[in-house]
Amino acid sequence: MARTGSISEARTKRLNFVASNRQNDLTIVIENIHDPHNVSAILRSCDAVGVKTISLIYNIEKFPKLGGKSSASASKWIDVKKYKTVDECFSDLRGAGFVIAASSLNENSRSLYEPDLTQKTAFVIGNEHRGVSEEAIEKADFSYYIPMKGMIQSLNASVAAAVSLYEAFRQKYNAGHYDSPRLPQDEFDELIGRWKKK
Image (tube, rainbow, N blue to C red; front, side, top):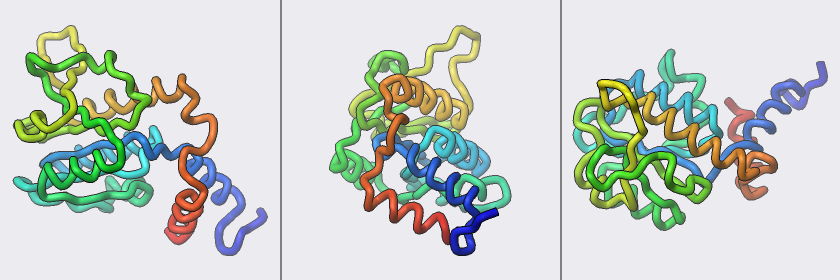
């Protein structure tokens, strides 16, 4: 098999394929999720739909350790930003042009299937028991719920993240966002360079 330096041709093709599908206009904010397995599962969903960067807000729980046995395959390929305050995280997201959507079932929430998720969207997923903080809900652009028809009106945090991401994926896919690379060339090249070292 032909090789490029120490990287096989097949691996180089795979890295280029994945990087060309990375979306710099879709992200997740994980707020104080306690169980590292839930964080790992969210990372895998992010990787699957092409999320390039996620944000962690941890001001109650401890920051989760990433890169363990269960999360190594996903955490290597997702850039992670860490924050201790909602304001700092949301300020950075808004500065980058993101609309912030908090996952929360309340009187002002709209269905996940209503908003245009082809725009720059940041989903906020909260703690397994407390949910998204009141501060994050108040400071988000809107809150949303995932329609359910059963007796229990909640999903596991990682499942809620996956459902949210895949609705965004569906809209973006149908809009042609995966038809050509979304990253600027310099950002694409930098990403490939880092990945080849992993």
